Image (cartoon, rainbow, N blue to C red; front, side, top):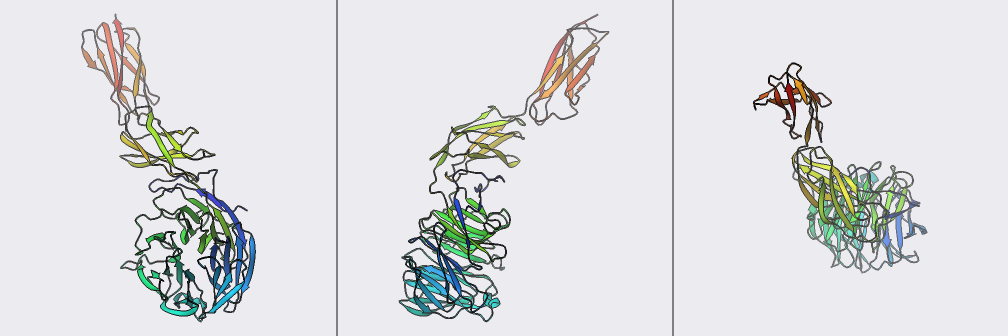
Length: 571
């Protein structure tokens, strides 16, 4: 059944996204399986045989057995079995023929086609849990023991190995739980991360070369500053398909992206997880195209982001918010894994109490196509006016199949007041669109238009248009008699109107009178009422043609205007 709620959001830095997610026809499918476990320890994906192994460690008691369930890539349960000892680590051989299972007292080997136990190597007893990793033909695992489980966060962890069928203690050790993550096939390298706890206030991340029988540590990094701030809170590790990048799920920081060679920060990081989400898991797809970032978040805040592995690719991520009894509430630590071809992501979620678990099988769309803005942008009207609607017309070209629902172009306006988000515009079937805005400030304004991509299209390169926003026009209308007498006087009525923003209150209009001899004098100003009307009364002192002129000097947002009327004065 389809479980998680999908929200496609705008992930480009610098542009504020709308709160309503865009909906598209092509969405990743999410099949959900309720797992028959009450605790979780590990997941392993066998792409050669299309199998998913999930283990339950039953860590509540030293003597508890373990449990492994097996599913196919469609979510059908194939089998399950109880192990002699508690299970806390899974890893596959390079050819996927063998599943290595880290049990309490041994490393067991199971055939991935028959699911039968084929070998077992006695290991040092552990009570806190194991990690298992395979590089080439060598198997590495951790051992951590404590009298009480509550003491595990500070107990010493040792790194052991199985090389050529021989069990050996490597001599590498540290306080607290150690996570292991092998580099891609043939790399002869694994990465070790120390979980935070009382064992070390500044946990480390390190890489090990495994070309020889004993691992050789090279790069190492701790993350706290000189004042002890910023220490690693490790939840999961992942190595990119090309072995050049390491991603770290850090509950305090988010998703760290590092250069695998020296563990320095990558030049371009991933965008931040949604506010309120704490990183819990991370995994790269085997084809190198995608990265999945799991989190623990409440309510409708996303618990899982699936996006291009290249952080410079601004394609819109897929966001999954897991809520309640059909989906779980969050992604568990170390709960993500991919099929080797990148066509399926497997995510384990749990509820708020951590006693129920779900397996999500997610299939991202297989292809994405390019998009671009074409032609030149134009405006309607051609001269933008403050306070009046402005339309910015353009065209967006989309490769590949046409979307079933209209996509949107986003826009921001930058002027002397700063940057303002502008309402998005739907793109018509022919690619045309019109972004509408009402500029509220005079002067230069630059509009940046963006298409941030959808589930089948990559983002387009931004385009910009700079305009000069002018004052809004005003008009003075006058109604005057054709003739009047000196004794009866002249009465003129009129109205001041303005476009754009509302005219200010308390406007006084300048009034002048020019008689037949060409003498001009200024009369008492005319007050403009709230509805824009005004009235002029005058007792002219000369006969003949008399010209009355009324003018408005304008204001901060409106241009000035004027009008005149000619009255013949008799008697």
